[in-house]
Amino acid sequence: MKKESIFLREVKALLDDKEVTLGEIADKLKSKGLVFLSLISVLPFLQPIPLPGISTVLGFVIVLQGIGLIFFNKPILTQRMRSLTLSPQLVEKFIWVSQKIYPWLSWMITGAGKELTHFRLVRILSGITLVGLALFLSLPLPVIGSNFLPAIGIFCTTLGLLEEDFVLVVAGIFYALVFTWLTSLSIELIIEQMNHWTLF
View 1 (cartoon, helix red, strand yellow):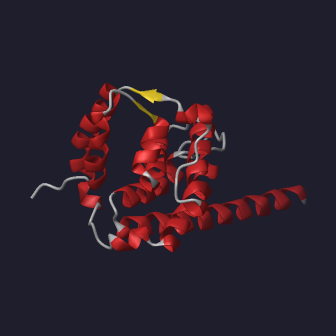
View 2: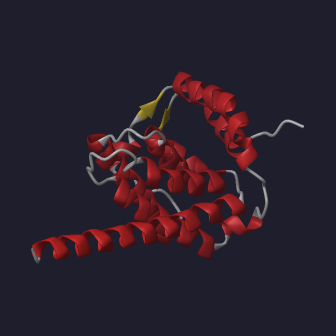
């Protein structure tokens, strides 16, 4: 039986409007609005080539949404971001493309633990995950994979929240923990090597 995206089913309601602003999307989708913004913002980085300038801007957007998830459970948008207008054609195109891509991603989505994704603690931990990974993603590092590696965790966490899949959310949070540990370990090794070099 063909899976259908829970989130895309909700987004289709937006097509009833003549045009829609980012603020209206955030208001109508409520807490999922901020997760949706984070998912859209991370998509350009799901490839190994770094995008230094863009990563700083979109990383900031994800950080804002992570903070919103932690403290308010709703999107944080500047007035300029809220007033950004999207045509129904653009929204419809997004849904069409997403429906084409979704079958390739559906294997990741188990639908397990739907109720757990709404627990406050889970959403707080997810928000912390988004903030931490987005801060690293926003660093202007001209290193292959510097955007891609944190983007994986952001993608899994946001997709899990949108599709109400607890297993996928936990996978994103666990990935963030491992990523943070390996990053801190790498920094320690670099500092140790630099101190070793200064002795000679």
